[in-house]
Length: 119
Figure 1: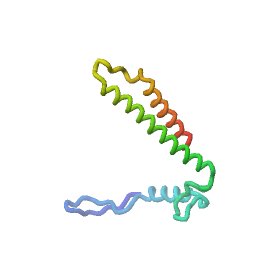
Figure 2: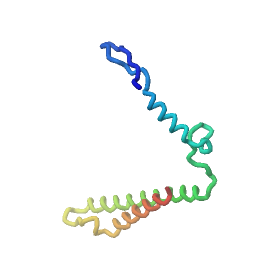
Figure 3: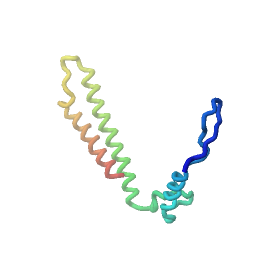
Figure 4: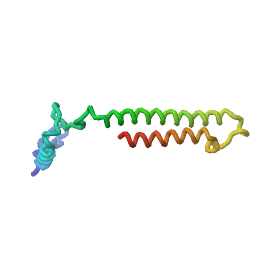
């Protein structure tokens, strides 16, 4: 089916007056396919059904802890870079030769792993 068009605007350009019925029927099918048991009081699909679950608490604590480990790891790496940059040019070494930089990288990697497990 074709949408109705009318002339309008300053230069007589056509304006779309109605959406095609195929779009409307597709939207109706999507809405009808959402089970009512998963609907919240707002009429939107419910994402979480059991907020008292111990798994939720474990996930939240793990996510917060993992992000803290990531922040510390990145700050350790930045500290190594800044310390190396403050040295005279002749005394600088590649950051990968600093054990402290590897500690920071390990913290970042393990923190990201914790984030993956949390979510």
